[in-house]
Image (cartoon, rainbow, N blue to C red; front, side):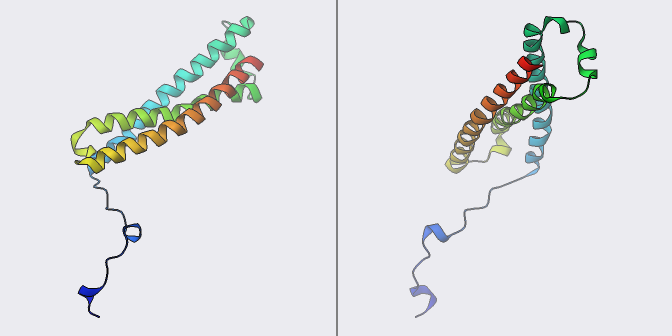
Length: 143
């Protein structure tokens, strides 16, 4: 039997086509970091305002409150908003990068890959943001 008579390998065993990556993809981390920091700060600020609604004695004493040291409620007011902001920043950065033609790629494969990745990231974000928001609310309430 020669090589021309051999059957082709099934599609499942063939490696996926390589994605085209260029210098445009270096823009993604440059977008992601400021988005993450900005959304994280907004989440922390929202958590702090929620804390002040339940603890009016801390109004005007922000530095005094945070200088008392890190405990459970303060940890919950800081870390979960930053964790929850990351998948949101990833969704926004991906959407911005999708608008950049050279970074997006061409063809139906690129559009299908973008749609599938955003759908998976949205599902992940829904889980993470919900848990992070619940933890931050508990921290604001206990603080």
